[in-house]
Image (cartoon, rainbow, N blue to C red; front, top):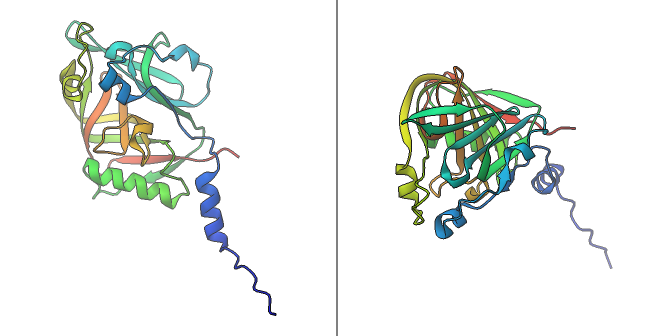
Length: 241
């Protein structure tokens, strides 16, 4: 009887399967759950920034304990935006506690020019996804990315929750604090992407989450929307060998 040998999987498929399951140095860690915040009103501290201050090449975004601001960490440099005297202030120390946070470490990045026809959030989200796939990044596992350059506009907000209000809803969170639009702003935007959006603490309508700090350190916070005009570059993490 003729023996039937099992077919060997193509090398490309083997590489894809391996890359999807193997750990990458830039894989993100998520602290806290947005569902607990909304359904249970849990705004308590789940991590202190000081627990992360010794990590090199750290990138992160998060919400301050009791929803009193937003956190962005760019290459181990923290920027916490909060409302003070009806304006937004930025704290560059590690003296902040967070209720929600997603973070990763990456010391090598691949630069990709964002085409001029990528102008709105939806197009940018698709571009990040396709660029990740093209570069062997598994979008089913949370990963960081950066946007650098000049954004045509960023619609931003900084939360300032009333601690006496225990009924937390997405709508009320978005309405609390300060918001505005930064036009033609030079900035570094720290983003996280995952097809399982809860892993990057993103809203149900998107798979990515963006926080930013302007280069002049005058504005920082959560990016609700962004408009581009060909003057920003995307940076994707490269796995450390």
